[in-house]
Length: 207
Image (tube, rainbow, N blue to C red; front, side, top):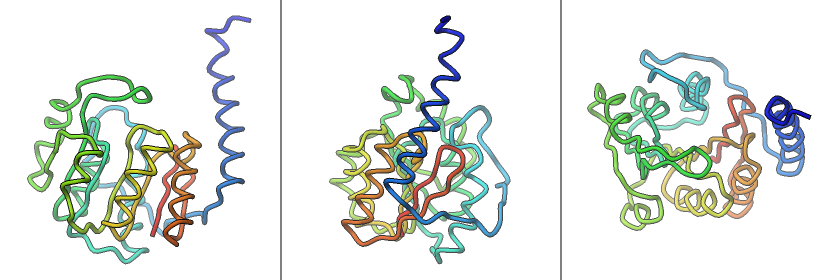
């Protein structure tokens, strides 16, 4: 077998099996957006978040969220940050901007700052979630968690988020079983409703 030629199909097959397994074990209510709306501005280039931008206005409306303050853990190049900036008065983006073992290692601060330079309502914070969550006691309308995709990190950051935001969303609930399990466990622990949008790598929603 030529592994270099076949690892793509094999990886996709494993992905489908794992996604099916976790979707059955850690059940969620499927989120059905009533409308899909593309924001005026999208950061150019590839992002694993592409497609999710269309459900954010509906998510805000369907869950009755205010649009004052949003925080995001995991900015990378700013794709999702730009989306939130078009629907919230103020957005705080927290990231080490050094990447991780899952996303790859790249100093992305200058790229994100350039991509988001048109938005005056975005504050970028170069920090890890472990430290930042010890110094911020603000209450947020929405929190987005898209950090390193381990169970421990997702649960720890998400646990802070459920105490500080009305709604918390988590990217990659389909791509990473540990993320879905962490969201499921948070929902059980804090009596939250767990919704999941099963497209574009999955978006978990706790409300």
